[in-house]
Image 1 (tube, rainbow, N blue to C red):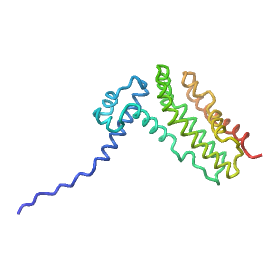
Image 2 (cartoon, rainbow, N blue to C red):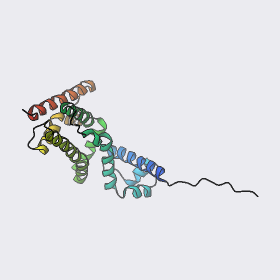
Image 3 (cartoon, rainbow, N blue to C red):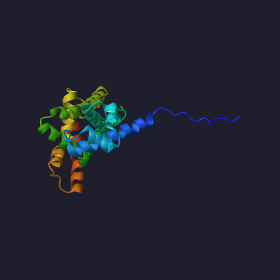
Image 4 (tube, helix red, strand yellow):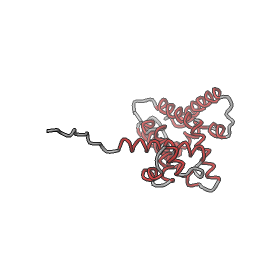
Length: 216
């Protein structure tokens, strides 16, 4: 009696679905940077990702949510929560310096600057909600994580800060200086010189912050 070969049952389509989701996010990221939000359609995202428009909608619902997910994925890739992990035995100066260097390189990265420019273009055209989405997923999140770290350092006696949220704002302002604006306006000059200045500015910002908040 002949037997029919048993085919291996197909598993759920989750890996393929995740590949499609990743492709859509990459396509949307490239198009948002290139064409800003207003100039990017769901049709264009689908074509760029090599999927159907229905697939894009099934994963993300609408363009606003797709944009939010692009920003969220990008920021979490660049700045995972572990970046702001606090270890009581670690030197707080080294911890803050590490955070400062990471932020300095991210904020001045040409691709990220391109994203900022695209957002500003949309804001100029009367679409401020996209800037708000970027703010919520970016600075709001990083400030919350830094505030938690600073408060932990205060609780362990490594820092003396009365107003932790205010200190978080000051920290980021000090390590950024005017470098992000200069890059956005194309006034950054030689790449090597700019990179050196970027790191020197971050180090000086951390040193200034610690002069203000190290326990006396």
